[in-house]
Amino acid sequence: MSESDIDQRILDRIKKLSEKYEAMGQDMTSYLDGLLHADYLKYWDYINLDSLLGLQQPKTGFPDEMVFICYHQITELYFKLCLWEMKQIHEHQHPDASFFEARLKRLNNYFEHLCHSFVIMTDGMEKEQFLQFRMSLLPSSGFQSGQYRMIEIGATDMINLVNLDKRDEFDDYASIDQLYEAIYWKTGATELKSGKKTLTLQQFEDKYTKDFLHLAEETRTTNFYQLYLKHYKGTEGEDKIVEQLRRFDLLANVDWPLAHYRSAVRYLQKDPEDIAATGGTNWQKYLPPRFQKIIFFPEIWSEQEMAEWGKHWVLEQLNKKH
Image 1: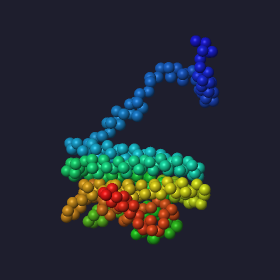
Image 2: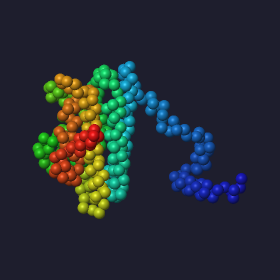
Image 3: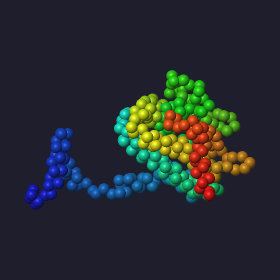
Image 4: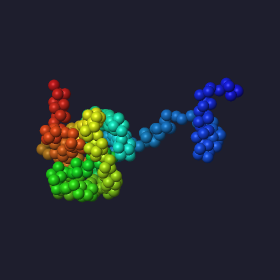
């Protein structure tokens, strides 16, 4: 085959490849030889399917434990995607408004899918099976999702994650370490009777505290709330960004915890008293948004909206029943 018989598009690409490898001091011919001997990429190899499907290792013989494991793994993969989008925004420090909006939309799509899919947990397991296999999982708990805490930290100022009844105790000079000690989710992992830290919380802090504090310091000026206040508030593109920030706030801080709450009521509520969650976490006080009032972006909400935080979810549930 002569050079004239080769598609010009192929020749153009060979030239570009040659320039690329030459700039790196590499021999393009060697790379082409490697390509000749390489096998075709297969779907199952590319996504490591066999490894992925081997990651589900139930601790009991109850069939519905597989549902429980798969759903939590799926959730963590979505959290990984969320953090991937957030990392791109944080690294830009002053991202273009269209870039910021586009990544927020992706983030919201991930969370919206998670909230809608929680029916797998709410209605997808037999209560009798769950109440038995859960005892083999102690003291582990979904509370111990470090990725979810990283999403919270990367979204807002640390003061907005402090326990509602302690926020007034801190001024503008409070350190990240001080605020972290009063972060809201620690209250949700205290023993119901003694008020002491559960083993669940102790394990969680041992594994993640350094990572959380590092991320909080790293995103002190680039978390989403700070980016909005410094670069988008009062600008021409503010409305579109606020729309996505409001959607994110509700999905992460109302819809998601209440989806958990609905599942907890389904499996753990029992007269005359409620069953403790795995790890002894206080789900009755921890999950409902009206108790915590975690709001990532207080600047974009009215006083009434914040006072009625979570009300829209209740109204939506009521409308579904009619």
